[in-house]
Image (cartoon, rainbow, N blue to C red; front, side, top):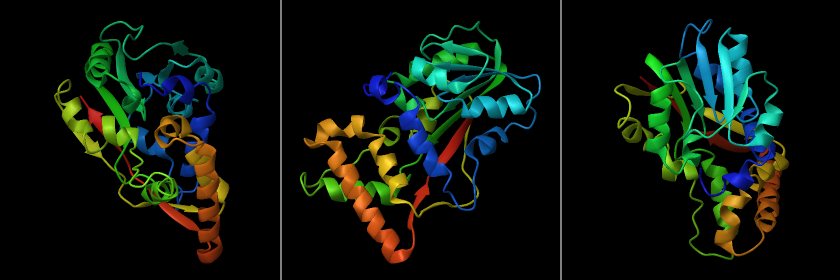
Length: 258
């Protein structure tokens, strides 16, 4: 896994801070439902959710009648998943028989893997012939205006600093297809058919989002990340006071791979 994973995912707190951003998409957009709608028939399918986190996709699959297992490397995450079938395992060594699963979900997790191709080969191994991988990730414009405020705040101390998103670096909507093509024969990238505007009227939602990624960036900037979080909160609060809301956008999509 990636270097920050040990601290980033010790429990579900950081993930939940970022998930909260999705609750402010207007009109409401339920990401897990949109992803699962890409497969029309779920009853009787055997599904593995790799990097299941706190179980958002597990409950959505179960509601659709699928037989679903959640897999995560973090015990803390599994404790928050509230699901009957959970496995503590790494995507690099999945404890499932070859050609045993109909669907593998990889929601916002492949950019956390240091060896993406190795992980994809393991996913390919456990999928039945004709099985499907749904790999969800972000694009380069995800939360762009919020990240711009972070960069602006950091540059007061570190001129020219750029907040590189791990998704953009390792596995994104822009570079994911070429990596998937080394393992899968058919890859299509599907994006929502409308703009996903995130409208915030509480500066703490933005601040908590920024706080959740501190372990990825604090060592780069040479000062406490809480300093940046407080500055972003102040700037977002000022924008809300002036304009009534702070607006950013979600840039997300899913690769459907066979």
